[in-house]
Length: 309
Image (cartoon, rainbow, N blue to C red):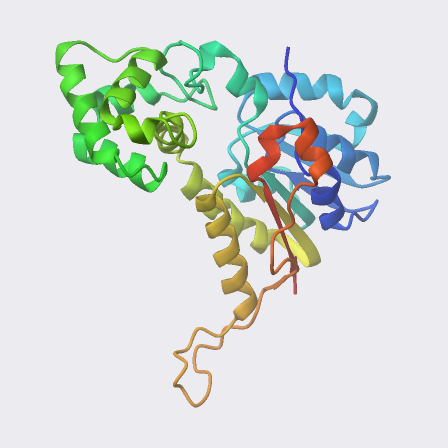
């Protein structure tokens, strides 16, 4: 059963300022919560809904059944946004939405291997047809590369110690399951640190998951493509769930709304760059207390919106 609670549903769609006759893209279909709300506001408009998870696409056919005549469901990675639109012969769109949270079913379905709470095969692939999984990262990557992704993507300060112990353990036997990896992580983190903050494996699992799915680079690539395909006054609405994603979004919006990149000392602009976006959220919108009560997973969500100039 595919059950997913959509975060910042009304706020993110409100940020798109829906034109009933416009064309919109939901780059992260997931549980179809945002897609359903966008499509319900369209008359002659179209929604392109993208996801790389077959289960999400199958679930969306049911959820979106009443509005399916206004929706095109596409299996793809959102870093292929321009290709998807080109194949549909759509040169411009009025809005693009991203919800970068891992969907609840992916976290909750034990066999997907995303969760450190349940024992399962090491997987973490959002697209099950993708060849590389968490098993390859943990058992085949070098100690240096494992430490790098755990530190950069997981922001784990004990990354080197964890990577060293992963390599030592896999010399004896492959690390095939999530709880095997959790035990290695726990052994690598001092007892005092384990007693504080979130689950000791949370940051490492996040780092490996991001590496497996190349999430940050895919997002950055897609955000640039979204800006390119937006019509004037079109909007991009982005929900992030951790500091790395939010930093990419914030810095991208700042850069695209600034225009000129000449050094501050230059008497006049020589780069010729003009602003492309207007940043509509200098500070991100956060979930309400009421939403957090109903859905604790929303606690780290941040919404940023920008408009094409």
